[in-house]
Image (tube, rainbow, N blue to C red; front, side, top):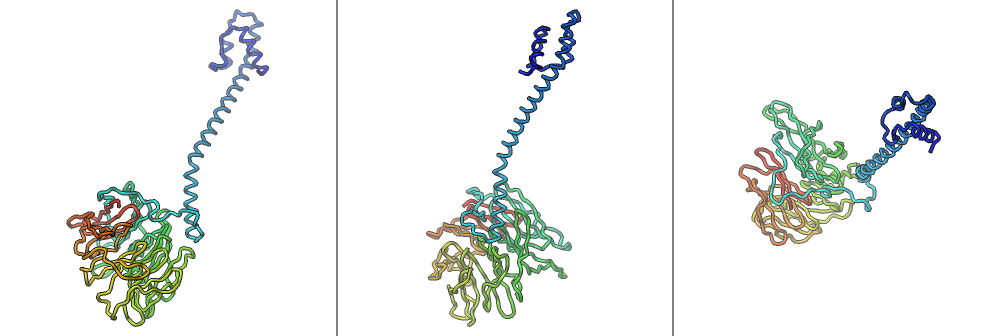
Length: 440
């Protein structure tokens, strides 16, 4: 006990006031008011002497309370910091992984987010995810983790300069974020690792309509809204009517045309540079997985071929070669899975959807008499497609036995685009434009 407290205790005992320091009520001046004026003068002097001591004691108590409060506040701040730290670490970790993925570092020990790594399982029955009544046309859809990205043309009067729109839609909640890119009308969207790629079209006015000039490829990160225009190979131009190809590693491929030849341009996310991967007299379609390219074209003799080659370079494998130089009756590639290349014959719809081993070999019928109008959506057990003769419906067939079941159908709701991830299949129907989805 401090000397001030001992003196104060003595004075209070003498005064018999019943004031308790623990109560802490009132100021030292109140003590003087409680002193009986009839008390001896010496006693009043003791009370007067005790007042400064009381004030000092109160200051000590206040200081301790402040220290206690500060300690409690510090503890609370530390608890809050600890609670936030995992989120901060996760954000920093994601940013670092994005930098690592772009820089091409060895990430064998780190799990890199991909288009499928954070997908959200959907309902068993088809359900509407988002209404797109602000779009006049839809030019593509891509699955990106727990979100969908849609590209299209904003609905407006035809006498106004057309404007494009990119929509990022939450699969879990259905909420959407609009991005109106200034680089053009987004077409042919594809997920590419940690980004989405598309071809921006520049509108050009004609007497009775608008037309779009697609000469560039843009890589867009929906998380950061960062855009990067991918360079075209020297002396080559983008074949604007032909689709892009991507894989989960972030590689981007497109068909480029030069003087008398075609080529496959490759943008490498490791080097962030574009190079020519393949050249041939004619190339009309390209697909890609993590290891190989697959393309349809013609060889030096004019025969139509389906060919594969390692992305990193290596020998070409001829998977198919036509018996004549006619393109009629040749297969059209419609999708890939881990082991097979899927194709169809537009001139022979009764043949249906076929599959051949990626390394080459005989084709096998997967779905007889099916005629898909869009690229297939393929998972481990099923093939999903929209029929050329019935674009109002989505069907799927089991790979094991070809058994077909109807997934969704609606009169006058033409299917414009379709995609999938590890959890769901998604499609966009018209009248009005609307996104639907269903869990696999």
